[in-house]
Image (cartoon, rainbow, N blue to C red):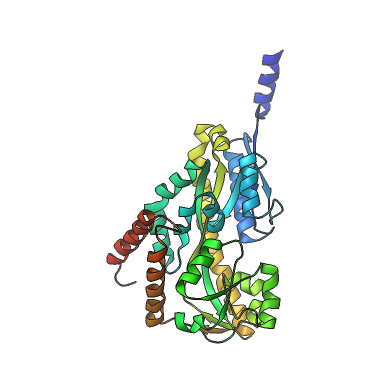
Length: 330
């Protein structure tokens, strides 16, 4: 009788078992990030004929990134889309993925991921997590109350930073900035009262939260890339039949590439709309970029060996310099 039941399900094309992977994301429903993850979920289900299903918990309903990592370790979740902030909570050297003023173009970020990806993946696997795909989704820029385009000009302002990013806060202090950690919900009031006078964030976030009305000066300087990964808990990844793993990675990589293009469009549209409503856009000069790169290299060199491994930092710098040596027209 048991064999007849198996044959019945096989005839109908219904899998005899299904692995459900619960994946958390901070991205709100309907955003490009959410849509990309749902596309991956659909592709995985199709590729596995329903043997592997992804159940998505969007919009932070599963908690912040620290909560999500804890729940993955407890087995309550099996995966998450994490930013560099969350990845850094898994291993402190993951901060080297998005160090300020190191990479200055999408091409440089892609080159770093190609060269450093295996080592970064190894750091996460050591801790029991498998990065299925790296994700690049735009850049972080400065928005200020008054023009502040050089490090010395920004040092005169109170810069909003993130309370849950102690490593980045330490980095800003090393650079000599006056930081004021505020949660996202506190920023608008902080700008209104003068508690903060500058923010750094992707343009689409600044537009969505209306911060630009109180911080209307924007520089095109690419301060840091927005990078992250779709991470699956290692035991769960190993339960996925091996024949599906490479196709799953390829499907996720295709979605991530399309997402990066979509985010560029969204950021450009956000900047256009903000400009129509008073945003002043300043094209960063080569001299200004050089000043930022200098203060970054000096500060990060002092932090290497304490905040993150000197060895991995020097590898990142080596690869950036190697790339630029072959692309001197950047």
